[in-house]
Length: 179
Image 1 (cartoon, rainbow, N blue to C red):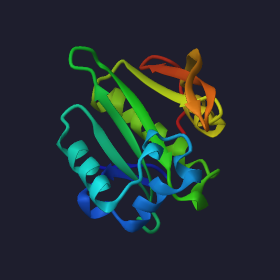
Image 2: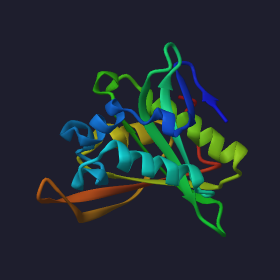
Image 3: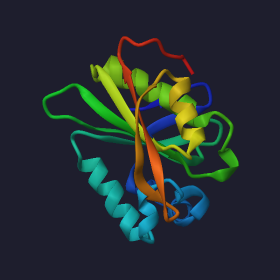
């Protein structure tokens, strides 16, 4: 299964995609600032174990985000878990390659996964959450139509200080961008 947009190719990650560069992203404080993986150092073995578990999961898809022009892996986007008895799922993503930040790749990848979730998987709602300080992530979700449903005040610690978390949702019949 592959999803294609103007500039991106999204496909399920495989063990062959786990590289030193991928591991380095997860250990880079600029990249992992808003990722829960920041609490533990990552290795090739831990990342391989994660990708293997995600590949085996029936209720999630972990897509790698690749540039179409050269198939360079620049990040990941995950759909799931899809709830067992409800057609809803979470969406999360990160762009690990800092050279690709600010270019709209997150929005473009989200657009593809939203279409896949609603058209191919028959889901009726997608949910996402982000630290309020992660303005780029919140903006990317909003650009494809996600709406802020609530803000959990002082919900998590970020760099040792309480941080709000923005919870967003998108229903299958909400207006959305074709980004």
